[in-house]
Length: 568
Image 1 (tube, one colour):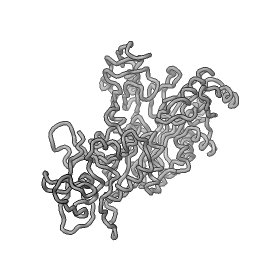
Image 2 (cartoon, helix red, strand yellow):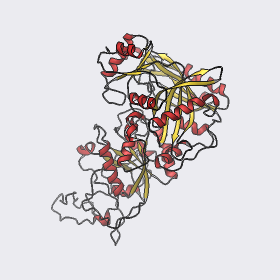
Image 3 (cartoon, helix red, strand yellow):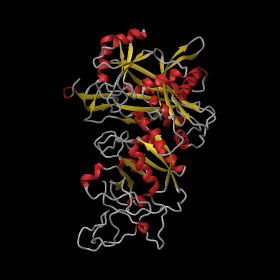
Image 4 (cartoon, one colour):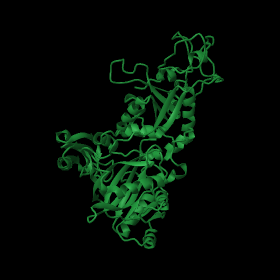
């Protein structure tokens, strides 16, 4: 339940002055409209007018308002038209019941008579911004911030009013507050996220709450677009190279930057024809042979990535991308044609900080096991391997070079590559980049790494790196246990009416799982990262036992659907 009228006032002091209250909720909840002891007394609007015949109430803002953000909402119709800041109430868990009260105030409202900062106080509270967080990772980042005495603020570029499913992945402000987030900034519902407006509002919040933002942390692929720009607008120096910001997101510019650094990349071309008629000339010019890869330039996971075995499939895939909307919600301007690279696929996760010996450091490597489903390479399971083994040395050097090429200097990175195995030399060779993301890896990879690599705390390292603090490294990044993520698919299209084999905790090496679908949901044959029915994570000392359980998690999972209620 969202209480838009609940208020909280500060203790009155005889000598008016501006200082930071210890309570974050009190600092933002005193409404600008009214300070009165009598519930029946008239309310005073921001312009000083009363709501009836009573005399105006004299309000000493310096005395009653210590770090005021804005007025409480009085017009319900205007709530979704304003950028807002949400914070938990004074005693959110004191009352009985399941519902927790949180408060939203107008983020752009400024006090009518601002305090004169002639003798400015010292900064009293350091803070970090989590941009577009997800609940599983967010919990660990909040804890890392707490240990460092940081206030943690979330910024949600596309607010969820509760209508979106999978609250873990698309959390509401309420859900974030309940897991420990201090404050949540949201732009107006339905509006396009404006990073300049967001920065201006955060600077206002920073001044009025006496904060100092130390870092902006992107929590998913779509946030990479804005995180460094937002950090720069907040006046931070510990941001990644802004001149290469587009190369960290656009896969065409990404390949150009990596190639300019002298590293091998796949041949590629941009396709712009709405019916895919430029496929033939592009394939001929690049001297490619089928199959080829056609993908969206700003995708994530395996969304809109197609393995095309002939020209007809390539034209259809290109037309689908060029005429459509990308996974990030933006109109796609072109499709990317790439040569198909053989070999196995790997993901290398890294931390970047000037305090590390080489500026970037590979922390964990995951080997992907995929199958071709309807022209898309779909995950079956991913297993962690030893990044300090000689067999992966060439992959490590290549991934570090890719990060430097696209200007990643602070925070986490996730590099996906393909490589071939040289049996004579017993090592992986000829790595080629698929893509790089300046963010924490998805699929709870960091959580699994923390559970298997002794002394490695990736969420602490992420916060430290983005804040410009020294990053603590473990003695070794070799995992002490085997770790696997199993991707559990639905093999049918329809409305889900029954599930068998969803009790993954029966498996001896079970660590965690999440069900992405529930009874009554639409399910489809898995083609991308969010179309699976479930994920299951397994950890154990015995590698064979872990891999066996990963196989059982997939094979023993079955769904029952109503086939005639959804298009095939």
